[in-house]
Image 1 (cartoon, rainbow, N blue to C red):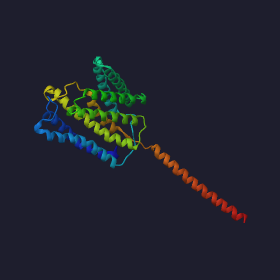
Image 2 (cartoon, rainbow, N blue to C red):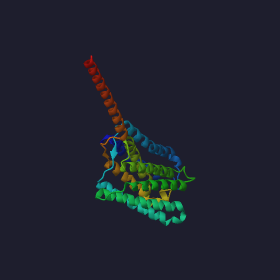
Image 3 (cartoon, rainbow, N blue to C red):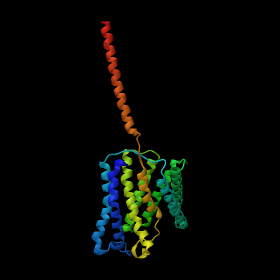
Image 4 (tube, rainbow, N blue to C red):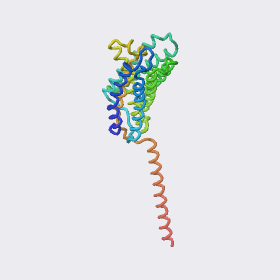
Length: 297
């Protein structure tokens, strides 16, 4: 990931400050009863929210202007394997919680099933990274399905409350997660390109940031016993989002440069080579023809 070092440096320089700003915003600048900004500090709170929106755009711009290389997923990595186990465990927890609320409807049951399948996927992938067990790459479709169902469920749950800051951040976070899971699946099955590799970095880092700012304030408030006084959305928050924010960082650092040429480049090279060979063949044919003419004369 040396070619993307400026994007990584930007993330590690500013992400901790943005996470800290989110904690301050959640605890001091948002009314826990209404979910809206405290009137006295509305401008400051709004600026912080705009910074959250601007940061992904900055990462995308830096990545777009920098050099692009195609990357591939590692076949063996202990850190990534361990983080896959942690993510799988979190998804099992999510599945159990959704299953306990199965009476709420078919969407909740679908969420439980997709979370369970995704948990198996990440644990299986983790085992393949630390042992010689072969991973079936088609399994990567299940996290994408879970991400889509989870996003739909969040839209339904937040219907009529989309103006509340916490819900806005939650929707953006799940949207980033869905896109990142889709791009990650392409990289794991080795169907990515240089452009998709660059997109994975910029969007993956943005996903990590939003996962942290979406969940960390709630976890801190819960640990100190102030969730009811500080957090407007008092529903049980899933550990999956928080762990995925850490997991995707480890995944990005585990990526390796893929020295194989993209299919498009290969096609262009083959076309150029064929054109060159044809020109050389025509030149040789012409020379032979001229030689025969001279001999005949």
